[in-house]
Amino acid sequence: MPVPKAKALVDLCLPAKYTLKHMENVTYVELFYFTNKGIADAEEVATAPSNESFVWKQQDNGTPSLVEASTAKRGLKMDVLPDEKLSWEQFFKATLCMIQFMKCYHWLQDRIDMFCSFFLGIQSHHWRTSLHPLCKKSLLFYQVKQWHLWHHTIGSNFSFTLAEIEEEVLRNIRDKLMQTSFSTEFNKMQSVSFRVFPPFIWHTLACSQ
Image: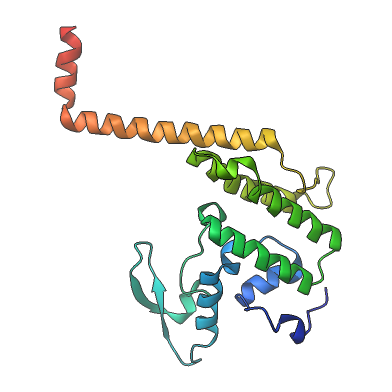
């Protein structure tokens, strides 16, 4: 696949080289690389002095720490945020930026059109404005699941299009998230109960009934 000319990228902020390689190979890459934070971080790494042996890396708790430059993950100083954990603002920005790079790297027009429909379908879905947080979260999980599956099935008898939202798949994802959320809350309640009433008290109460 031909590499885009420099003038085609003049108005775009370049993400990490790792990301551009995936654009060239038409393979999956996390949307985080196309967010403002991902692009800014990649730029800092790219412009760091070549003799710099350490870079600042953001830890899980948000605090910065010095790490060896060779350990900076995939051209970034911070860990990549999974697609399903992006904010909606990050999702909007990243998808628009990714579409531009698809064009720059000469992806097939029907694939670009498919991804435009795919991202627009998620952003305009009626669950997007739902008062239930798990409905909105389901849309981002759906995007990850279907995108991965689409890449794995390209060229096979199981290939499909992302253009239309599969409502049944989306509902199944929501139901699983609800089940997981319920189980988590139930375990928390049990944990609190056992801290308030030690096991031997629970046993005593049960025997007295």
